[in-house]
Structure formats: structure tokens, C-alpha cells
Length: 203
Image (tube, rainbow, N blue to C red; front, top):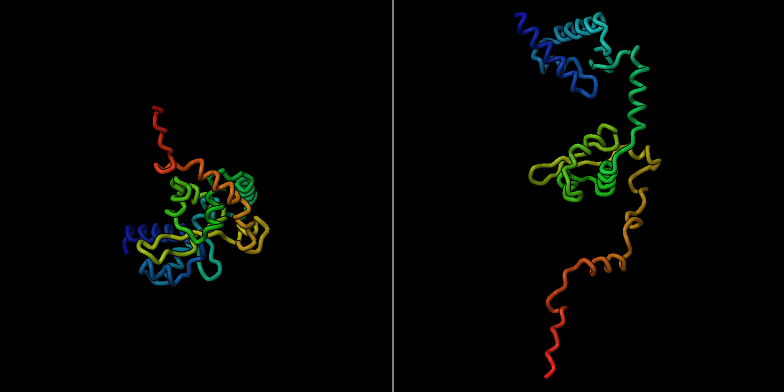
């Protein structure tokens, strides 16, 4: 096994563990890297030792039957400060509007949100997902199989409700039928039949 191959395997291992959201089992790593389980275990052990020796703010640990990256325990005060500061920052009006659309229309696709809001929602969706308020809940069975978005348990916890069924009825925020009708009348262009013909001049 050449040094070049070893370096490539190490880079691949780091890349996989970096994007993983849960501990990755050794046998899965071995399958992806096409290396024996023992080799993968040795690589993980060597990497963990190297990170610790270099004094990095993160660790490679074996937990729950797999390997994952996590912050170093000594850095906990800084991490907690960062998380708390992030939670204190308020959502923008655009984010709140998008969150309301997802909450009441879920599951809903990005294009449907864009259609309702009239703007590209990608940035706002990323913000809401990073806050843990929304997540991908499936795919549209239709053409393209668009990703569908929905709210999370963290969203319900934040609002202090048990389910989205406990959200205030959306009708509470919609004007009454008489108001809507008046608005429609005021905004609607007059039909030709509604315009009275000018009276003929008197003889």
C-alpha cells in the first residue's frame, strides 16, 4: 500500500465523518473505503491520537458503535456561549413569514414557498433549518421529487404546543369575508358592462 493511497484513504475518512450527523459504524466505513475493518479502526485510532496531540478543538471519538467528530470537552464554555448567543438572535421578518408558511402548509416544497412569498426562500430555509425549526420531511411523489419541508419537535417545544394542530386557526389572522369583498371590489378593474354609457346630448 503506497503512501499516496494511504493519504487518500485518510482524506476520504475525514470527509465522511465530517458530513455525518450520527456516529458512523466501522463496517460501513470499511465498505465505503474498501478497506478491512482492522485498517479502518487503526486509521481512526491514529487520527484521534494526532488530533489530541496537535491540541485541536475537536476530537474523533468512538461512541454508540461508530465514530464521529465532536467538540473537545475543554472547549465547552466557548461552545455553550456561541449556542446561547445564536439562540438570542431574533429571526428576521422574512424568516418568520417563511416559518409560518411552512407551519401552516406543511409538507411544502421550496417552489411552493417561493410562489407564496414571491422571492427565493433558499437562504431563509437554511437559517430556519440551522435553528432546528424546520427540516426535510420527505419528497414529493410527483415529477422531480422535490424536497418537502415541515416543522420539527424543537419548533413545537419553542412555542409550547404539543402538535401543529394546536396552532391558532389561520382564519384568526385573515380579514372577514366582508372586508375581503370590499378589497376585491376596490382592486378589481371595472368591466365594460359596468361602465355606464354617456347620456346622448340633448337636442
